[in-house]
Image (cartoon, rainbow, N blue to C red; front, side):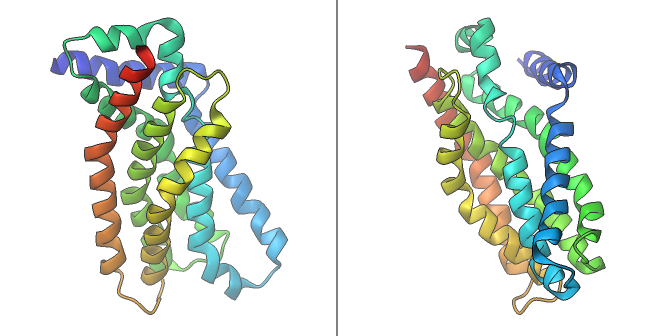
Length: 223
């Protein structure tokens, strides 16, 4: 079973790279949002540094939604999802592995790009470190929560808009504590550890519970 899941992980990584790299598209969209906001707000560096963590987190959330509709839909179209349902490996583990591969392709590049883009928003060293660390801990939660929406819309041809409507309310707590942790690291009024630990708990809860919810939705879609 371990070999099967590992093969599935590398299969999803390879397919994502061949299709065109959802990670590249996510980083480009991330850069576009971060670039446009300073033009809209103006040259006030103090204001940019205050709202910079929120801008980066919102950009990461929206960028992460780009490829979520294809998380299970491609497997549904080519029949692989039926094989996953009949596989000896539990469907929950299949969902877990696919989400991990999706995060490596789409979420990890955003985390690596965040310090560079943070410089465009006049963030200092501690703020850059706080944003990067909070994204590293929080983006897996966004991916796994998005898997629930992807599973619910797997049978829809163009379910991207519906998926966003389903996922964004679930992601609001992650967004709140992610921004709070990043802001605290840059010199906010609250200690960094408090929102950061809550963010860690939210990610762990999403990783633990989302595969079961997504797997139940996929089984329901196959009936």
